Length: 213
Image 1 (cartoon, rainbow, N blue to C red):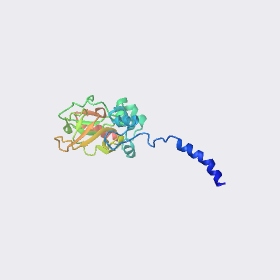
Image 2 (image 1 turned 120 degrees about the vertical axis):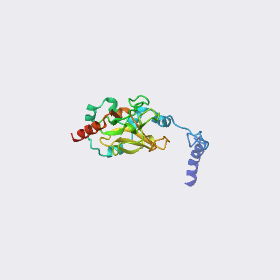
Image 3 (image 1 turned 90 degrees about the vertical axis):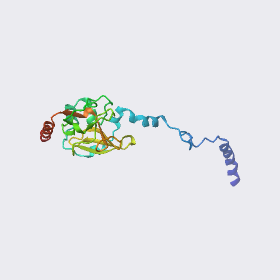
Image 4 (image 1 turned 30 degrees about the vertical axis):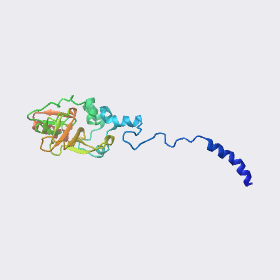
C-alpha cells in the first residue's frame, strides 16, 4: 500500500516542483531613502491638505460636536441666516482663499470684530497685526470669546479656534512663529467668519441682546 501511494504522489510532486515560483512581494522596497514604492492613492491623500475644498469634507468635527455652546441653532436655522460661503466656513469648517478676505488688509485704530454667525465679540482692533499670511491675524482674543480644541485633519495636529458662543469655525491658532507680539501667537481667522464695527460697546450690547432672545 505504501509503495502505491509513493507511485501516485511522486509525479504530482515533480509537477509542483516544475511550476515557476512567484515572488512573495509584488512591490520591492529598499532601505535607501526615496526608493519606496508609493501608490497613486497614497500620493493623492498626502497632497490633499493643500486643496481648500477638501478641508470641508474631511475636517475633524468630533471634538467640536461633543462640546455644547449657548447658541444651539439647527443647521437649517443657520442656513437661513448665513450666506452659502459663511455656512461653508462657519458650520462646515471650510477655508477661504488666502488674500481674498475683506479683513486681510484691514487695520482700524479702534473697534471690535464679532462672530459673523451670532455677533459675539471675538477680537478688538488692537489685537490685530500684520502677519503677511493672507488671512486676518490676531495675537490674542477677548477673554473667553474663543474656544480651542485639537484638529487632527489628515493626521496633522493643529489647534482649531471656534466662537465660544455658537461653535462657529474661525480658523486656527499658531504659536512660536517669532512675531513681535505680546503672546507670540497668531490667530489665523477667515474674514468671512467675522464682522467689524467701530463701536465696541454697541457690539457687546447687540451680542447680549441676541443671547437672551
